Image (tube, rainbow, N blue to C red; front, top):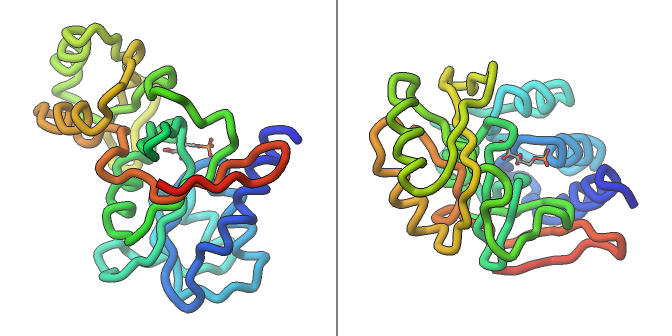
Length: 219
Ligand code: 5RP
């Protein structure tokens, strides 16, 4: 099975996590695209979706699934999203698709975060994938210096603005042994909108696509 087939496999498996008649939180990325398609084809009836990006909203609406504003929602049983890396505790690096801020907002609304990913995303320690950080433009240079002081190299993602209109840094050279502590620290830096570390909002369940089937990790 190739990577696309593994993504389709976990997308299909994630349908079992959807609560019929309720809202579903929907992340962003190629794995989530497969999930949206599977949801539309499944015949499962949901009350609508809360989306983490313009990209996912457009795909959901294209399938006739109503997209609700996060501000209008008080109860969201489950949020389903991919990850760039996931560690043995369910902590994740996210934001490869530049949607980290809205992803964290929708994850915060949800009762459960279900991560769907192919097996390549599972790592013993986070950090080989460059950590995305959404920032306020005028703070960029200072934040690059702050990361340098940690021994890391932050680079501006060229030509990218998030759905919120902000630039993104990709931070290379981190070995993240304490994701919660690092997330907490970076969150304090002026000019940081969102760090793509999901330790406070880690997954409670991960459906991992492997050549022998879907592996379920409970955290
Ligand atoms: C987008 C994300 C995605 O969940 C992450 O990049 C994984 O994407 P894919 O499913 O395409 O591998 O965080 O901001």
